[in-house]
Length: 231
Image (cartoon, rainbow, N blue to C red; front, side):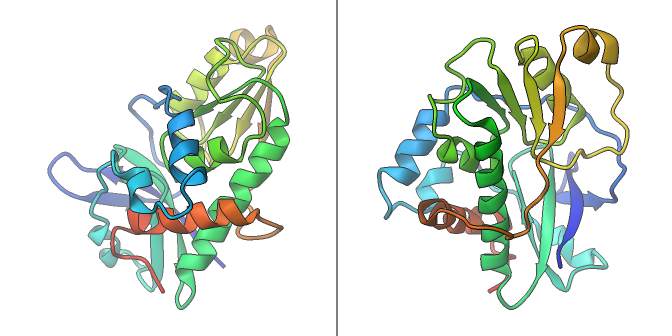
C-alpha cells in the first residue's frame, strides 16, 4: 500500500506536507520544448542516470521526518516545484515500488493518448516519463493539441490544460488534484468547446511496464527522494 501527500515549499525552508484537500496557488509548467531533450537523455543513452534531471535542483525532503507516516519512504514528483505531490511506500523495496508506479502510470497515460497530437503539462518525473513513453510526435509540436495530459495536480495546471486543448479534445488528469475542489468555468472551458476531462488512475505498479521506461523511472528515484528514499 502507498500513501499520498500534497507538498508545498515554504518561503524560508524545506517543503511541508498537507492533507488531501489543500488550497493551490502558482502557475503550472508546460512542455517548454523539453520533450526531445528528455527522450534523448534517457532513451538514446541507457547508461545516463542523474544527468537526466541535472537542470532541476532538488528540494530537501527532510521535513517528511516530522510526518506521522514517516515510516514510509517518500518520493516527490517534482521536488523543484513550489508545490507538488508525493507518494510514500514502505521499505524495504520502496525505491522499486515507487519507480514501477510512476512508470506504469506514465505507460497508461501514453496508451490513452495513442497517436494523437499531445501536450504534457508539468516538469516532474511523471511528465518526463510520459513524454518518453509517447509513441507519436514529440509533445508540444502542435499549437492546439487534441489531447493535453496534466501532471501537476494544481488548479493552474488544470485550467491551463483546458485552455490549451483543441475544441472537442481530451484533458487527461494523470495526477490526483492537489485540491478536492477546483473552481473552473465549466460552461466556457468544458461544455461549450466539448472538452472531455478524464482521469488516468494511479497504477501503483499494477500492469506491465516497458523495460526502458522502468529503467528511466529508477534513475529518477534519487532526484525524487533526494537521499530520503527507501531501499
